[in-house]
Image (cartoon, rainbow, N blue to C red; front, side, top):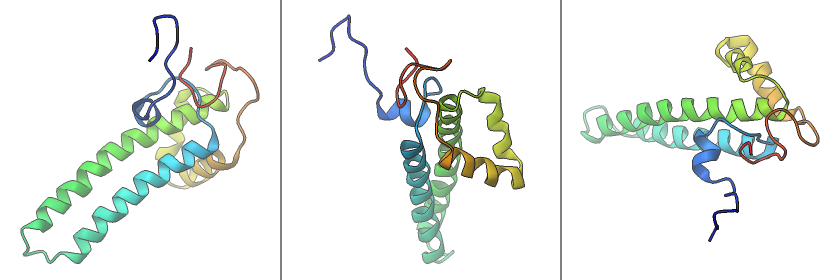
Length: 129
């Protein structure tokens, strides 16, 4: 249990929805893979279930809701990854342009972060302290 003087470490809420701090390549890739897996599972259910089935509408809403939440989360993951590269968060706008987004995503996946402290935190995979 953390006392008043100790700082709390990162948690899943920070990983998926926090914007402060830095994130290395592995958690970034795993976060994107997690959302891709959930979207794929919901899409598979939509394809399998006939349109006349009442559960079709349920799975369509699940897919739509997961899409909204995953978009927000992937933006937050990308912002933290940009922080690890010591770049401003506004560079995340590159993910909204079709051709640039593929190159930007590959750069975020494979470009190593800055060693040591930078403007966005002392340690990687942690919120800014």
